[in-house]
Structures are given as structure tokens and as C-alpha cells.
Image 1 (cartoon, rainbow, N blue to C red):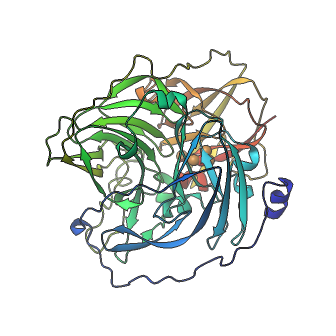
Image 2: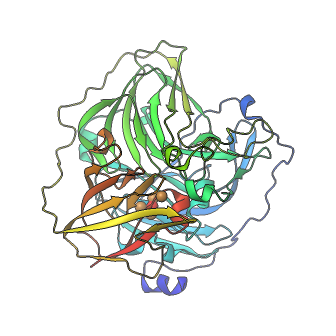
Image 3: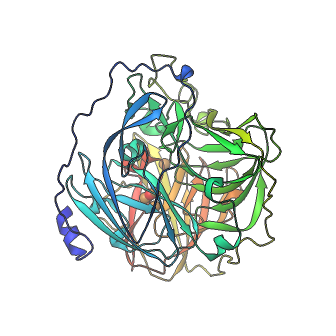
Length: 499
Ligand code: C2O
Ligand code: CU
Ligand code: CU
């Protein structure tokens, strides 16, 4: 089955055996005992950057340091605890080889980018251990904070959690022209919540109730490092923040109450910058913001945090769902996560050096492109339901070979995402950057961080969110799904064919 599909994309993919498919048991000190409260902060690490035109990602199990003196088994397509950052320019063509040295099938998806069907990482394209997949990716999208992660059938959650995820940054002339903070002043940060067991392993074992609401970690990991710290200068930083959590919504804020200057969303720069003191992003969403430490005295710290908010499931589920197991205390880590809406420290910035102020000033217009005014010719409605231990779209769960919707190429459509369930659903559409046009019920408005190009939108319980989209580049079979990876793996996903 896999092989047949590989062969069908003749020339793109070849199944060639690799030398060692799986490393087997790796040494891991079993005397590691971690008391979460006592762990010092580890320096933040940025993933190594990879450039085209040809690059190889070898997915394998590696023992990586995720906190000072604490090693964990990660599954990653690079050397670090998460995948490397792929950097490309619009107009470039990349050849990416994925080698699977994991003990199970995998495939990578380039979230947010418009790519040919054969390069989209559909689960039916997953490759067996010992095989490779050749992606040909013409980078046609504009500068933005895209990312990639595993899209293996039923295994997206655990593989992405273990490290099969990373950034895919695209740059172009508009981005260059703004002379945004760059180099050491640009920090891509992939945020994930995980549970670190006291033997140093990363636990992912959703229990029954977690299969409904989602799986929540007991601490934040940034670029695969647990609760990191980073030394900064008294200047402006560009933070490219991705929510790579399994199920958690993040309410991003700075601990000193200073605002972010938001400059971009999932699909790139906004028409104009906006000052915001907090930003909500669900799993799969990204935000490009500037944080200014110019006014912070040297020696002080400012943290990037996820602020507490009311668990949207609480009202509808009653007590007991979200209130349980705040970490469980030393020795019982892994017993439960911090519930949805719980406060979570992310990264601590230590202001270490004063530099001559070089304030970045936003031009009146950040990006010249506006949403095209196109009349929608069709409306489709999708209901995301979670009940009786099932997560469905319009009453159905995912069938790899069933085409649920046929979408004529070039037509502009309105897709209505309706959430009658007690849980938030961050809805993601492949192969597209859409416009959020309306939210009915719940928050009742388009949030400030939803005014740019989006590929994922958070639909809270009781909400309907309408988006306008057009597929006019590639034809083929693509996916739409909930990006709560528990829900996705349990079938809250469908195939649409652009024809
Ligand atoms: Cu980021 Cu199909 O997903
Ligand atoms: Cu995607
Ligand atoms: Cu969902």
C-alpha cells in the first residue's frame, strides 16, 4: 500500500533501505530522579538551521539533554531534541529527503505551506522503517513562520510530542525590507507541554478522559528544552512562537505586562503591526511578535508565560475534568498535567547586557498585500463533535481512502466550522492560508491575532467560525482536521480533493 503510493509519484519517492532502521535500547541512566521544582533552568537552544536546495532529515531515536543533567529519548529528524529549523526563500526549490530510522512508519507534513499533493505528508504516504521519502517543495508562499511535524496515521500526537516537529521559516523581499531584528535577535520558539517522568522519560499515555479533552503536560518545553532561560540585551527581539502542544491553548504574555508588537500570523506579515498584551494561540497556530527589553534594567528577568484562563471545557463538563492532578508533586510527575487554562511559565529572559538602543519602528504598512475581495460561490458546513469517546466531523471519523469533499480549483468558498462540543477545536486546513471572516457565538468576534493569513483557527465550544478560502495552486487530496492531536489521531479529520 505504502509502496504503491510511493511508486505512483514516480521520480519523487524511492524506497531505499537504510543501514540501521532502529538503534534499539539506548543507554539511559535509570538512577535519574528528577524533582521538577529543583531543576535549574537550562539555556534555551535554537535548533540548527538548514538551508536548501538539498537537505536530509533522518528521523531516529536519540538521547538528548532536555534539562540540566536530564536526558530523554526523543524521536527527532535532527540532532537536537526537536527538528532543525528549515530556512528557505520564496521562489526557491527544496529537495528534502526524509529517512525513517524510527521503529514505526512516519511522514512529515509542512504545515501552512502550499505544496504538491505528493509533498504534503498525507498519512497514506507514510514510509516504513528503513525507507526514505523524497520531497520536492517549490517554495511559493510568502515569508512566514511555518512549521513541520509528523503526520503518521494515529501516531501524529506521540511522534510530534517526542520531537518530530520543527520550524520552516520562509523569507522574502518584503520581510527583508522591514529590517526586523535578526541574527541573535530572532528567536524561533516551538512551545510544547510535556510530562517528564522521574526516570527522565517523556510520558505520553493518554488515559480515557484525556482521550476526550486532550493530553496536558506538567511543564513547558521550548525547542525541546524544559523551562529554559535565555540571556538577552536591552533591545528588540523577534519572537516566532509556534504552539506545538498536543492539546493546550496558550495565552501568551510577558510577565512584566509589557505588550508584544504583533507583526505576523500563521501565513506571514500583517498589513499593520498591532500592540497586544496577550495573544491566544491553539495547537498548530503561530504568531510573529516583537518584544522590547530596552526598558528593563540589566540584571532583571522578564518571562514569556502562558497566563491562566478559564478552562472552556469546565462549564460544560462540570468539575473534575480540568481540576485534577496539578503535577502530582515530586516523585509523582506524570500523574497528571496542568489542566487546560492553567498558568504555565515558558521562557525566562535574563536581561544581561545593555546595548545602545536601536528601536525598531513599524512602518504604517507592514505588508502591501490585502485579502483579495472574492465572492464566495459555495458554503460548506463542518460540525466538530466530541461524544461517546469519539471525535467526528459531520458525524464521521477519518477514513484514509474516502474523499469527503470535492473542491473545484479556483473557486472561493466559505467554510463554516461549528463546535457544538464541550471542547475547543483548533481547526486546520492544509494547502491554504484563509481569511477568518466571522465568529458567531462564544467570543463573537474576530480576535486581533486572527486578522492575518491563517491556516488554523481556534473554535471554542459554542462557536461557529467562518473562513474564506480558495485552492488555486495544486490539485489532489489534502486534509482538514482538528489540531488537538488527540482528536486528530482519533479521527477528527477528513480528506478533500481539489479538482
Ligand atoms: Cu499541522 Cu495536518 O497538520
Ligand atoms: Cu498542515
Ligand atoms: Cu478537536
